[in-house]
Image (cartoon, rainbow, N blue to C red):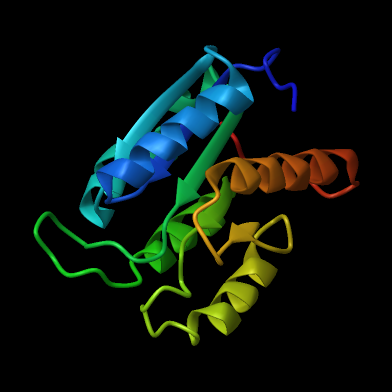
Length: 165
């Protein structure tokens, strides 16, 4: 996937250090060195990164592409319990029209089957009409590939582009 001509900003929301490392490696492989990566391990951390940028759109203007990659199960704040806080990340991205994808191992002991219909319903509200997801395992490369394909398809369509700043 060649996206190196673009200036890209990626926000990764992942609480586990080993998975965050894999996500960063996958982002760099997909976008090259011309990428700014922000990371958050909690929902509060995501809000600290994203809210000022979502509100003050000038923060996004220097980036042609902005992507958010999120886990579904992580704590709201440091030391908290793993909960489906990824839903809050999705809500923020949908509200502000940013490209977002879910990379989560929902099948691994989370008792989260109820999230699949929730993801489908939320996807219908997103400008893409769906939310790219990789939920059987955390395959960050495949998740990024799906997100870029969704974005490319969307930008080729007649639909108005999501607000990217």
